[in-house]
Image 1 (tube, rainbow, N blue to C red):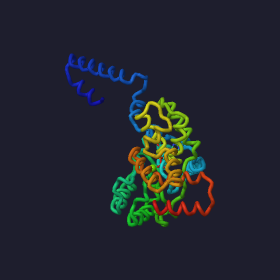
Image 2 (cartoon, rainbow, N blue to C red):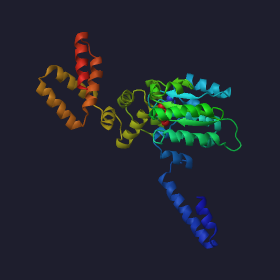
Image 3 (spheres, rainbow, N blue to C red):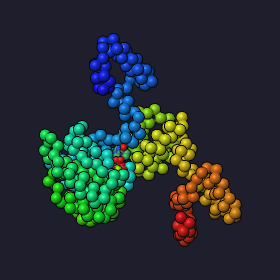
Image 4 (tube, rainbow, N blue to C red):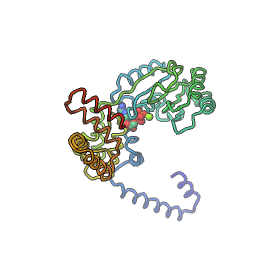
Length: 336
Ligand SMILES: Nc1ncnc2c1ncn2[C@@H]1O[C@H](COP(=O)(O)OP(=O)(O)O)[C@@H](O)[C@H]1O
Ligand SMILES: [Mg+2]
């Protein structure tokens, strides 16, 4: 926009007017495409995947981890933020918490004060030494205090890089705080673990995922049926990112999202299919159930792996003597 304006300013008056009217016309045309009274910012956010669009902005908005966010808030108030190590399964709010923390510390221009490195960035020893070091040593103009280095998916870092990191943490604690995020805490060397305050992010309770899903459903005008919602929550297993991504994919593909749509869209076997397979395996001849499974795999594009884990879930719901259960689980295990 500024560039367009500058170009216009250097031209004679008539072309200026022409250009102005063209601009206005195109703005009007755009307005027609999106005529639901959205501001520019909202329009920009509208193109984003829902996981980004509905990412919590403040620590308060991070649900289900109140104890963690409260503790972090206390650290900030006391001006004593330690190095943080946040771990837990995907889609539980680790990245969101750290970004909210950065926003809380530095306000909207927080990007200037943080260095964010994730698994897609090269994070060998050299990067840790050079990039983090030079970031740690430069100061942001007119600001005091520390900066934040965010190492997302840190369990992908090599042992050598982690050892280098340990030195960097030690030498730069004065002006930098580290936030280390990972799925598996045991992949982080004990030396780093002991220098950080650890927080575990557990899978989100279904209730919390449901609240967020309902919120998004209302804001985006999604047509989600009750059994569709139940299937969505069951499949997401406490992973909010998964829930929102599946919801968006289904919304793009179907007008009405019911149970069937959710299972088809994600390629997961429908519980009814699983039940049919298990019943057949227990009652029919080997040949009959073998061809049933093969045809199901072909017709519905199901993966054997999903059928096996589905069978496991299903077996949990039926009564049988312990010895029979052990036998079945043992064999399911070897199949897998
Ligand atoms: N505790 C939470 N509270 C609110 N939203 C969440 C929470 N956890 C996950 N989300 C949603 O899921 C998306 C992915 O979360 P993210 O913080 O990137 O997960 P992680 O880093 O733990 O894998 C976010 O954009 C947000 O919309
Ligand atoms: Mg993350």
